[in-house]
Amino acid sequence: MPPDFVALDKAHVWHPFTPMQDWCAPDHEPIMLVDGEGCWLTDQHGNRYLDGNSSIWTNIHGHRHPRIHAAIKAQLDHVAHTSFLGFANPPAAQLAGELTALIPGGRLNKVFYTDNGSTAIESAVRMSLQYWEQNGSPQRTRIISFDAAYHGDTLGAASLGGIPLFKGSGNQFGYAVQRISSAEQLESLDDVTSIAAVIIEPLIQGAAGMRVWPQGMLKQIETWCRAHDVFLILDEVMTGFGRTGKMFACEHEDVVPDFLCLAKGLTGGYLPLAATLTTQRVFDGFLGDASEGRTFFYGHSYAGSQLGCAAALASLAVFREERLLEQLPAKVTSFTSVLDTLRAHPHVIDIRQCGLIAGIEIGKSKDPREEYPAADRMGVKACLAARRHALLTRPVVNTLVLMPPLCATEGEMQRMAEALRASIDEVCGSD
Image: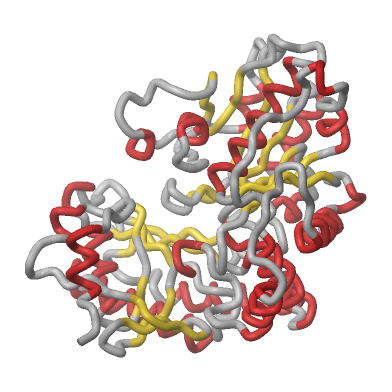
């Protein structure tokens, strides 16, 4: 008799961002995902669902892509993982070369590997602070971040964020952070000599409810950073690898940061791997005799993992071989048309879109002041209802996230929108 995996899960597993009392209730049967192909996932009962948030914003080319599968299997014939501390390996070296080649003019020519978005951010911030400390500006200890930002859940990354819910108990920890709300507020700061870096999610904030930044804001921030010799850190953990219609969101405004933080879609959504790209200037600031203590003493056990790098190389190959970037503008246009079918719904307050990323905000009426109280968990209820219409996604409070894999067809995107419409009707009513 096969194991009862649901019972084992309820008995022993603690899930992230999940109210566990509801999860463990006797009448709740969790969806146990057991299979996937393309945009579709299959549960323990054989029910199929569209992957409406790309498996928490990670999956790029769909599930079980043959090119990525073959690359992982081929790497397994050699070695799965070895230490990256004082050792090298071919996939990591090749991937670093390919990633840096994606940046215009080779301006980000150094790659530091970790294993998730939070640690990619930690690397960038710690490099910034250590650079200034050991290169003549030890007073530069302040990090500028933005209201409602989200940069991860490790202590340092969480301290950068502007959403108290994600910062845990206490909330007083981490880096010296000053939060602002706009580029204009950045330009009005008086004391800039103590600022080490500015960090931002380019074009769109994810955990803030898919909040889209004004056009031109990113370029404005880059211009200010260059004028004051302040490092610019871009968190492209969500927006990287085609999500916004270009390989990286910063390309839309011809911005090249000092640090580019990548994770989630880096491996096509297959394996944990992150990369922090930076400049020759930053790298040179850490050079010196070992006795000088200028080494960057930070790293992770699975940094530069061969399997992760093999998957990432295959994902980049898919972009080239399937000419995905050329297809994205038409796909984004189709996605916009699909989203437009929801705009007239009486309980859809707003739809915010950036490329193939969208947030559909629901409320009591079209009046933004008529929002549902967060305690009512209407976004959660709508996403649970969507499961009955073969769609899996998660909300940000009352904003329903729709972020299909890049391989989604117009028909699949339309089915996703239809499932959301039906779920909103069930939870909020159709008039």
